[in-house]
Length: 84
Image (cartoon, rainbow, N blue to C red; front, side):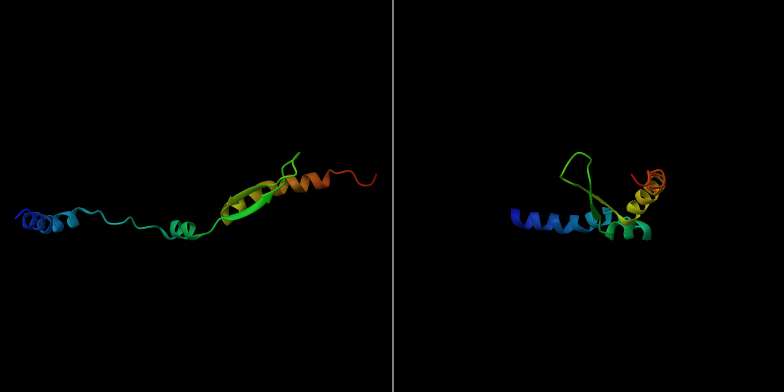
C-alpha cells in the first residue's frame, strides 16, 4: 500500500516540478565562442630562474597582452647600445 501511495505521489508531483524548472539561459554568440575557445599556453622566461613559468590565456587575451607589451619591446630595442 505504501509503495502505491509513493508512486502516485511521484506521478502527481512530476508535472508540477517540470513546470517549475527555469529555462536554460541563452548564451550570446560571443560568450559561446569564448566558452568553446581553448586556452593557449606559453612558457614565459622568469628573470633569475632556469625554470620557465607557464601562462595560459585565450587568444583574445594574448592579443591584448602582446599589444600592450609591443611598444615596450620596440623601445627597448631602439635604446640598446650598438657595438661594444
